[in-house]
Length: 96
Image (cartoon, rainbow, N blue to C red; front, side, top):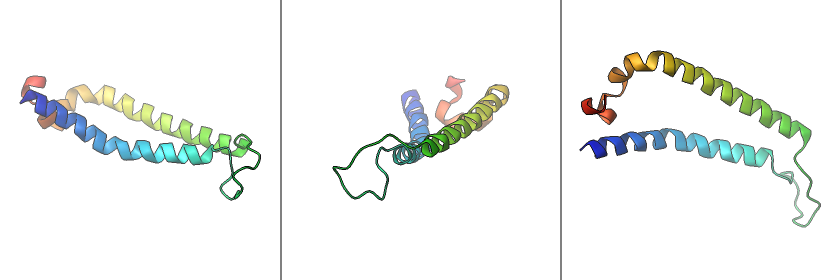
């Protein structure tokens, strides 16, 4: 039974974070692709991403990292006190 609870907690994290991961992968792939979206020739010259695209990707990555660090700090500070109230079912009483 404990195994089912742990797997369900992992499944919950996958359901929450996989769409975000896929969206960001597509965003950065399109932003930093070598060809521009309006180029129709497949054999045309391939250049690297523009400086503006790299700057936009860098700004987006910095924003994402700062949000993640802020949430992580809050989780570390308050997580140990409230983990029993927040996640009683995926961990179960034996997991605490």
